[in-house]
Image: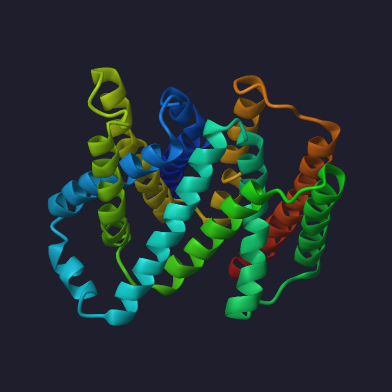
Length: 305
């Protein structure tokens, strides 16, 4: 097969992986709705436990135990993964709480804000230089958050919480030299003792929702699959799809969340909320145009013909 056809086929395959990953993440409120009768902390605990079980199987199947052992000989990597495990636990917890309390629009706003926040942290932590249009995008996004606070009189802590926790998580995973599967496996294992202890405590107290009906037990066990599958699909897509294209596609997830928040969870989409979303979309449009323009310039330099 010619290289051009092979590249086109790889890109198409990668796009499919990416769509599946972002569709899973965007549809996560549907899962929380499925187990809506369960307390958010118990859902989070089950998500940790079943993700750990599934990652254990994946690491064993991929025969990566040597890589796991290597991490324990590198204190910096080990402590870094402990930190990232706390961040991903916070992110999961805020997301589950928001979906369980009909605050999906706030999570959507947070994930729309995330790529712009990543630019800011890239500048602060990694001395990345920002272009003029990126500064404009950041300014408009800041205005959106400020307007939301001014009009509603409260801090959109769910939006900021999911954005900052995942952004910090991304920073940790960027600087920690560890295999993706091994990293996620150890993160879930670090969270496992606390999650397992909580489930045992609720079981002893008789306040747990697990172990009463088979369909609820199956739904809670499903949390491991809905956690790991999109991460696996995202990893496959990242190998085949250019970063600039992945950047555009990531907005697919919060768009789905926004639609679910309005039409399934019947959340109010007031003028105050609309104004902040519109400003975020303007910021993302500026950011996306700049990214596309720069990618075209890079392509012309690499292919002067």
